[in-house]
Image (spheres, protein in one colour):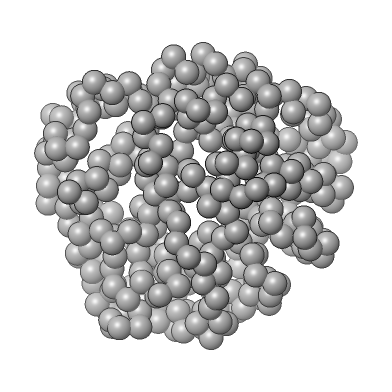
Length: 345
Ligand code: SF4
C-alpha cells in the first residue's frame, strides 16, 4: 500500500503548444467520465488516500469542467483546493468560468508570458495568446483574483524583460491587487531541460545573461522562490555540475511512498518525474494488469528508472554531459536532462 497516490488523466490535452512545455506535445484527447472512473477503480486498491485529476496539461479545458471537478472530488479521498493554474483559453471565452473559480475560493492565478506579443505568441504556440493573457489579467482583477506572472527565459527572449517590467508598472498590478487585499507576484526562471524545453538547450541562459534581468524582476523572483540571490534560482553552469558529478558514482531510485502517475489518452502510465516518454513507461492500463504497472514502478523497471538505479551517475555524465558548457541548471534538472538523453542513445 502507498501512503497516497495521485493519478492525472490527460482527458482533453491543451490548446497551447508551448516551446518550454516539459510534458511535451501530443495530440489532444476526448475521453469520457467513465474513463476517469475506470482509472480510479484501477488504483484504488493500492492506497487509502487516492486523488484523481482529469488533466495534466490544461486544467478546465473542456466545457464540462464543473462536472469533472465534482467527479474528481467524488472519486478522491482528498479534497484539494483548485490549483493556481487555470485555463487562460477558457477564461476569455466563458464568462461563468471566473465566477466558478471565485466560488471555489481561488485567490491567485498564474499566467505565462515570454515577453511582448510576438515572443509570447511564438513560445505559447498559439496566435493571439498574448492578447488573451492581457484580457485574462483584467478579468481576474475584476473578480479580485491576483495574477501571478511567470516568465520562462532563454537567450532569445531575455531582452524582453524590460518590456515585461514596464508592462507590470503600466498595468499598475501591485496597487490594483492591494486594493482588494490581494498580492501581485511574479517570477522568472529557465525551466527544466526536458520535453519541448530540451530543444531549447542551445539557447539556454548562461551567467552573463543574468545581468540583463531588471532589478525589480529579480526582487519579485527572489521573494517568490524565497532565495537570497538570483544565482540560486538559476543554478550552476553545466561545467561546474559536470566537474562535481563526474566523480559521483551514486545511483538512485525514483520510487516514492506518495507517487503521482500521469496517464495519457491511450492509458499509458508514467511516473511524473519526467516527461511522459517511452523511457519512463510503466505499462498500459488497457492491456497490462495494474499490478504489473505498480510492480514496474516499485521495482524500477521502466527503462529510465532502471538506468538511474543501475548506471553510476558519473557514467551518465561522461556519456552525455558537456564539460565546457556555461548553460545554467539546477542539479536535479541537469541529472534528469542527462538521464533522458542517455536513455535515448
Ligand atoms: S506548458 Fe502547459 S499550457 Fe503550455 S503546452 Fe504544456 S501543458 Fe499546455
